[in-house]
Image 1: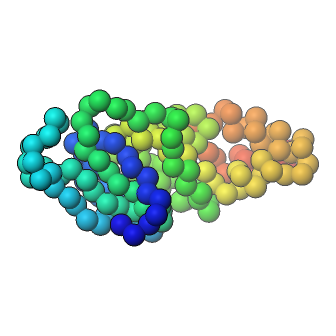
Image 2: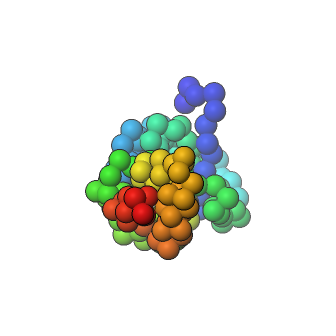
Length: 159
């Protein structure tokens, strides 16, 4: 990787599977080099996939097959801005439908435990509405949602 700053994501042996899923699901995502362990290590053997270089929505990442010691948490998430309900539905359904889990307010987890915020741009714009009453209605509507409903956000903004 040539980037000066790269996210390192810890996996329990599934870094390559995760990287391939992200590359198939998110635009501007690719799988790069796959590095195999030059020797045995605590959670793997020589020749096993150790590190996978990949990009998710333009963000350079490294997947490290480090074993079961550390788990992903909601303290870190990818926030993916979507342009419409169709894109929101496609990404949400890809994550949740591939062994993931729904959560509140546009958050979900993939099957590897990584958190994602699938966020329609209209939600972000509406939450920043200078009409604070409109922004509050949007916020209150969002708080009732799992996957974000663009039409409901637009209706809440209009009042």
